[in-house]
Every structure is written in structure tokens, then in C-alpha cells.
Image (cartoon, rainbow, N blue to C red; front, side, top):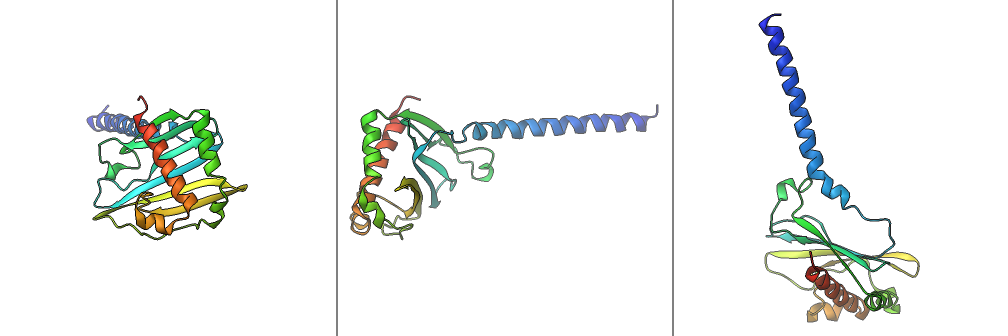
Length: 188
């Protein structure tokens, strides 16, 4: 066997090892995202957000998802900015909590308010933040159909939003804030 044949075989085995290592790395990085895919449980409400402007990451994240069982999940910023590699490595970690029957009942009652018939699909920005902003999409079922509302900087305590959003939407945003706080305070 010649030296050329030996090195050709060596390069081939090194190439296979590199391909296997790269594939393993990518699959390992993607596995948490694949495992965190939504459950088949019925979803009561889902809130997806992303920040824009001068922020660490503009990744879309699950702010809140409440299931009919009372299970709650959401993603919180992990402290790591992975903007270049966000498709593989998230800047957010998934948390879970559970609502008791009363809390879940309050949320479901809010979502049945007749005021929601007047809620628009999108609202312009009424509250201005300096150098940044939050874009939020809320999805839930209303009268048997999916209702989707897109908001920019939806602070329910700000007078400008209170003046321009229907009361039902302001109340829902306050409830979302409370549930999100419970999620963030839940044991990890």
C-alpha cells in the first residue's frame, strides 16, 4: 500500500468523524427546543412576545401559555444573549407552574366577556419606550373562534393604553401579568 492510499483512507475516516461530531452537536443543541414543543392539551390562552430596539435579544419567546388543566408554561430570559445562534441556542429558559381551579376560572371568565367582540386584531403603539419596545401577540378562543390580538408596548397600567384599549383587553392584560408573575416566582 502506498503512502497516498494510506493518507486518502485517513482523510476519509477523519471526515466521517467530523461529520458525526457536527451532527451530534447540532442535534444536542436542538433537542431542548424539540422537547419543549407544545403539548396536545387544549390551550386556553397563549401569549408570544419579542423585544425590539436596543435590546440583548430580539428572539420570539413564549411569555405565557395556559392549558385547560391549569398548567402554565412560559420562557424567561436566561441572562445569555444568543442572537447570532438563536435558532440553535435560546436566550430563554422554560418554566412551568400550575393555576388552581379558582385562578383558572377567573381567566376563563375574563375570556368570555362580551367586550371582546369589540377587540381589534391589532393596536398601534400608544406607549413609547426609549430605545426599545415589546411586541406581543395574544391568542385565545372567543365564541368558538380563535381571537388574535397584536399589541406594541401593552402596559395595562399606562393611562394611554387604558384610554385606547377596551376594558376587557385591559383586564386580560392585567390577568396575564399576574399569571406571569406567579410563573416567574414558581420553584424552578
